[in-house]
Length: 68
Image (cartoon, rainbow, N blue to C red; front, side, top):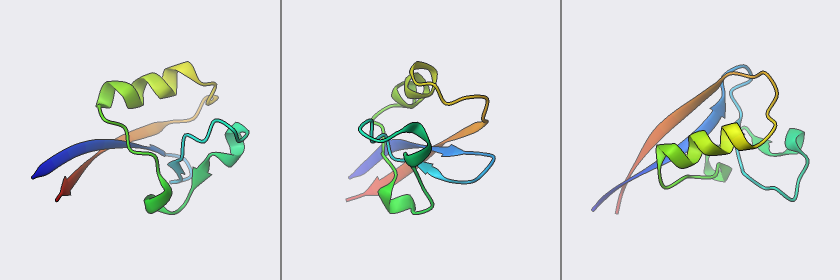
């Protein structure tokens, strides 16, 4: 079975977003893709970028294909 999910990466420093809202914004990023939060839809990932105050950074949203 193939599943698609989406991850957010900061295009300026190449860190992945973890979506840990218990942490300050600057601590929600990781260099380890395995710790990145995977969104169910691209719209969910886009919404997270728009809702939270990420500053003036550039982002990439990556489609992740998971085969199980």
